[in-house]
Image (cartoon, rainbow, N blue to C red; front, top):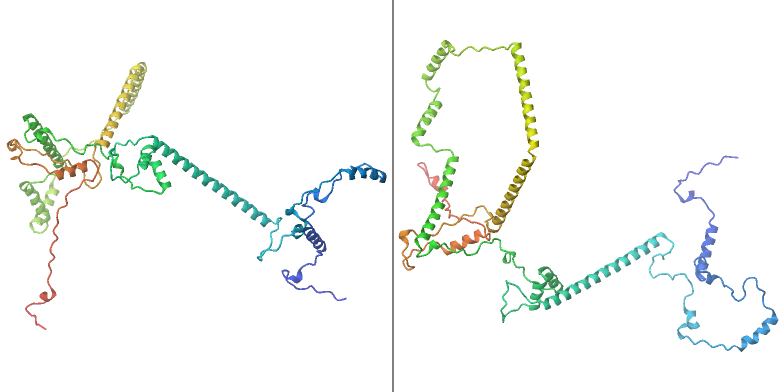
Length: 465
């Protein structure tokens, strides 16, 4: 008998598949289909649907005989039975029309119906539940926020109605043309700007923001300083002398700063002092240009060859062993004396602990006072000082004064000093409202000069075209 040859077929083809009997699986699926068409699966239905519990004849009792049935029958017939009322919403004619199968009807779309046991369906149901719970939580949070905002608004308005408007920056006089809402002003004055802004946001209203320095000024310096009594048109002698003394002190301070700057800078030489330096530089630069320099070099070499050293000969002193031993003993004695001295100092410090403690307390107290003075200086500089905003530092304006021979005693013939506009400008700079500025000098651009090409071409050999 010839031997069968193996079929050379790829294993991923349908021809290579094994034939397995699936009749039992088909029977099981058919049974499930029949159960779903006749009331649902038996495994999912409750016991009271599948079974009937007989409570009249319990287990172990005898079945009733015919005589007992006849005896008991008249008694049963004698009991009147009331007919239940007719339920128009639950008629049998309508029940016939209702679907009695547990199989879901086919959907209008082409998608596969959901199977409750599949994993994808379970995931989808879980995701739907999560989205529903999330929506419910979001809705609950939104309602809570809304209720809280309404409660805050009611409390703010009730509090504003109870309190009167007390604001030092707002005039209490009645304004006939006032277009602002008094209720809004009461809310702002009573609950504060943050809460008032929230209430306005709820009402969808808006007011322009006011700069902070209207309430909190950048400097505590007064806007208008009182002038010195010496600047009067008819001052007393003492007041005028005090004003002149202050002006002199200002000029002396400027002169002192200029002298300090000149001391730090290199000194400028006069023409007579710079002449020897110029001659030496000229001689150094012109060396080697003439024959006299060569002869001088030859004479210098001859002098060097004949010169003899005048210094003393150098001798090296060598120490003996006895001298070195003496030095070692001397160093040991010095070290012992130093150690004894340090020990004596430590012992004395041990007995003066009280005095050391007093010194430490005094130093801490002085340090605390120094810190307090620094804080006071910082606060003064912060409240009354002038900050540096731009390129330049603030410079105090010159004192406006008249000399003794310029005071006439009346306003008609008096010479006016200073400028109101310049005074206001310096006051704004000093109070940190604007940055210090310097008046820009007008610069004149240089005129560029050049020759035209036609003019440049004209010369002694020029021939017109």
